[in-house]
Amino acid sequence: MCSTNYKGGLLMDTPNKKNYHHGDLRKTLIHVGIELISESGASSLDLRKVARIAGVSHAAPYRHFADKKALIAAISEEGFNLLAIEMEQAISMKANSAHEQLRGMGHAYVQFAITNPSLVREMFSGLTIEREAYPSLYDISKKLFNMIETVVIIGQEKGNIKKSDSNELTCAIWSMMHGTAILIIENQLKPVTMQINGIEHITQVCMDSLILGLGAS
Image: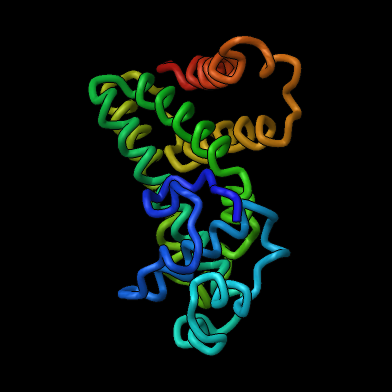
């Protein structure tokens, strides 16, 4: 099995069945699922294959996941958790400037997508809107939104961001971050991204354009 770009810290090297520890079978199954998605997309994912790679019985995954969709929801939730960590680090490194925090978050978002393209595609496949079926997935996606909105509100209080509806501004910011990331991982911004530091440059241009529009009025 090919190594994955997954940054969760447990699957950085190419694993095989003997590498897995089943003290937390649910987490193991999620990690195996992420690796399979990273290799060949969600269409390649099924619970029997995940069980085989993890070295457990075919019935074992059903103790934690009712079906493939439930496993994908858990994988997406893990992705949002990892992205939230990256975003929190970006915020903490630029604690004194809302604009710099937004720039840092934009770069962190894009880098996460580049490192984990298949995972990011699955995170935004639509399961987050099924709130009753997957409440914890919805909650973590909402946490990411709230992180961005908190930066906006504090920036407004300091006079760095215009006094406008913070929810709407957050929607615009997330749209810019996500749109930039998706266009990059789908190779839609070539030849710009093929230049030296091209990805960092176009991300900076996008975030600077957004921040200019957010300026205090």
